[in-house]
Length: 247
Image 1: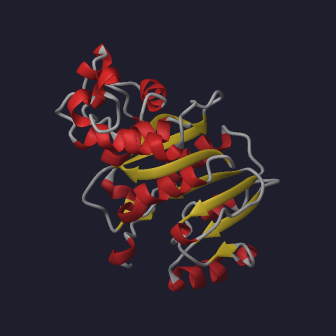
Image 2: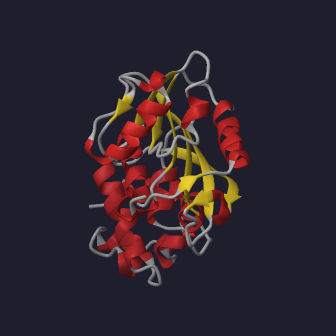
């Protein structure tokens, strides 16, 4: 077990099956598992019929364990960090994983880099992170991650996972969410402008947009009533529309 890698291995077979069932509700022919660890999910995933499967694992010891335990994984393990690699397939693919909590948000943004290819994501996160990703405007945990992810994916919070489902048990509860690409992606000025707008707006979330984002807009635009609101009151689509009004 390596604390530096944020490892908490799933051991609850009921939770494993619930994750597999949620995954199977989606159509895909290629699948990548992020952080297979001890193989709790892997043993089910390699049995899925007609699926081209790969697993991403950075830990040397776990790679050896997985290869010895599941010989069919030969040639299908990508032995590196997901944060340092290109997309695992040229064609569209699905993503599943009990994501290491210390880099789970970074993994999410890596998936956003691959958004044109990702067909669905079933991911386990620390519960408060999962809730933040799925939150909508007006919710106190709605923020930068919520908006940036939901600009491209519909997010569904699926179920809670208790501390006792892991070895070792984490100090926090976990949650599993599903991401599916929006059928009609939001139009934004550019990813750079959109990200700047969202991060600037939420950097001073108690202030009105007029005060928080005054450097991003011409004075005349700032007189509009929308700027009386705070960042947490704007929907994802309103942020997208507002990106076109930036200087």
